[in-house]
Length: 290
Image 1: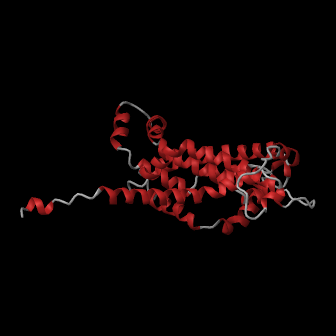
Image 2: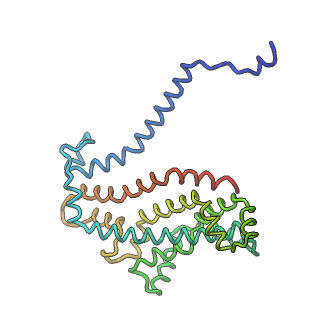
């Protein structure tokens, strides 16, 4: 027997290969259905009468669907006000963390200054600090500044960057060849011009990751608005949903709670699907270079 025949692998039979692929697809489809079941249940419950939500065995398709639930919830709670408050906080906080984190990450990745690695290590180590450990001193600080009861405690800290977003962007910036900056400097470009016209356009996948993470955090945040927003006019969707859930009046408003939960979930789903490709690409690229 020749060496070539020994190294040659036997061809696999088509049927085992087909069965293997079919089994893999069935497992993935089953996992996908399990992951989507809570979302289907949310949409289904938002179209039911309150007594239908607790029926056993559960009815997945409402008969008939109560589309008026989506109109009636606006008469029960100020959904427009809660949505507008959430959008204001999410927009300005996301904008702040993208700008500040990208500038900080660029300095840690491309500039040379004394103590750079030490400062970066200190910033990265703050990830280990839980929010509960800093909650009281930060609340006292914002109280003395007169910011409690406004959106400022939820927006201003984002303009000082975040350790995770700085880390992600720094990893990506380090993958960009230094020759690009050298060529731009030879042509007379300043450091800010290089940052805004060369570095940031190339970092679109990593910036997408930061935008999606910041959007998800601020849109769904409950604890921080609960601490700093004390007037109902300033409530976000998360606070409004919680207030509706525990509304006193002896009425079962579970179907309205499901409608508001749908309002909270749908923008997140839309943002993820719009940014899915760049988000996955950014996650992959930020891990290429340590």
